[in-house]
Image (tube, rainbow, N blue to C red; front, top):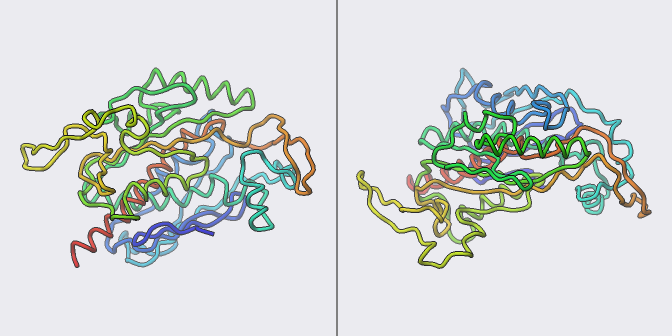
Length: 360
């Protein structure tokens, strides 16, 4: 099972949704990086369940503990173990799912592959696995901040509602100003209405998270199979419920001619080579060019919905499933810090790889 991400900045996540704990082990973080629980906890607070009426009502404090790799507030260069103990799992809500497969969930695929599955909460297929990613991502974010990189994501779309913002002007405060995590106040209000309506109907909605990395170093990414876009796509498509990835203009680029799409170069007042537009999304030839890295991730509607659905059981008999439990009617608001974490982890790994080349 692929539970490790990264080459030099390596993260292995562990734990099941209804197990004793979830967390991560970070290996490859440089020594002497200032690090404390206070650097990690705010990101977990943004990801945790029960934070508003439009997310799952599971009550978890998600308090992180650093078990190793840090002494006197500094990283040691040794593996950093991070753990969050589960406190509010209600396995009884999943009794019917012990023998029945949820439509569009991982239940059947896991059973077919391994011959066994963790039916309580979905095990490793649950979004609870991302606790470890977010905790590790907070460390990667702090490492990147030492070279001036800023990472930010927000909800750009929920169902048929789209935000209209200037991506260069969006701030963290703008994103956190409402429970939808959308920096367009008018769109956010409508998004919340849509999610509320879906929740009351026992249904779910999907959407798009947009993320940027501002002031990235030039030179991140390697030809041919280790392009930065390729690794970002792998990172984002590994997230629960992720179904699509775009970089820069993405699929919209097919509507343009080359003369319209190309990013022309110029030299700015500081002597730096820049581009006048950024349809490349900060990546050309699979390598960062110093412009803002701009990506989008599409998330499907939550698979577990609170209304009857046709399915089959473990014996292959057709049946009906009426799920219970506490599930996100829309994953988008809580996906924002998760997308940020995977963007940070990918860039931190590539930055260490580029630093190794530069120092060789």
